[in-house]
Every structure is written in structure tokens, then in C-alpha cells.
Length: 150
Image (cartoon, rainbow, N blue to C red; front, top):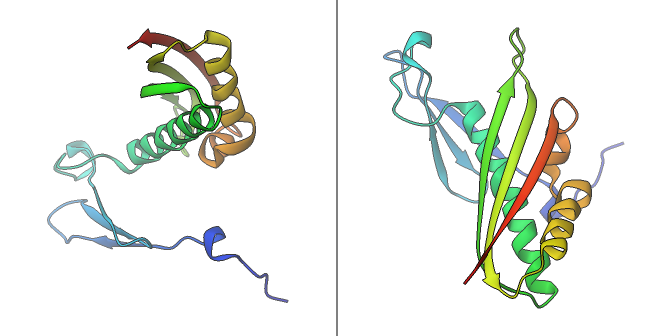
């Protein structure tokens, strides 16, 4: 029996290798956007775009930043900026999954409270950010929050 998906539950992406001269790929997302990826020179790439695993890390940062901003806005907090700095470690042997990820949030706003922003970050990682929840199956994810008044 086929499972029914809501339109918002389904994603599609097509990846095209750019040819025998290297290890560059272009992804066309279901929403019609292009994302370039390339490999390291030692792996046959030309370092012309992010590595595929870097895009996984970047996507996770974008996912959680989106959640944090949305949670704060819905709570009527005066958030004006959100930056997430991610650092990750990978396994030494194949498959080289992420084993540790630290996310440092720098959130700018007027009158933000540390505990409110930390709760928004926790809600993202515990309930909303599907990317970090998936990566949390192989990696220990830690977070820190820095507030900037402005």
C-alpha cells in the first residue's frame, strides 16, 4: 500500500555530475534552485564549490537558525539578527559520519533574555529541526548562545 504524503512532506532533488574533468556536481532542488558542489583536489575535485558534507552542515545550520528566529518572532521577542557558527568532527573511517557538532548562536535583538533564546535553541533541537535531529543519531550536538543588544 502506497503511503500518502502531504505536498509539504515530499522533497525532490536531482544531482548532475558536471563531467569527467573533475568531481563537480549541480543539484537542482524541487523548489527550482541550483546548488553547486565540488570535491577536494586530492579527491579529483577542483575546490570550486562546497563539499557535499559541508552542504549538509550548512543546511543544518540554516534549519536551526530558521527555527530559532521563527520561535522568537512568534513569542513577540525583538530579534534582529541570528548567526550560527558550526564546527563539526567526522569519523576517521568510512562512512565518515559527523560524530560531534557544536553550534554557537549569536542572536541580536532588543531586550532578549538568555533563557528565552536558549529555550528557542533547545526547542529547535528537540522538536523542530529535522536536520539536527537526524544528525543527532550519529553526532553529539552541543550548543552555546551569545546575545548582542542592538
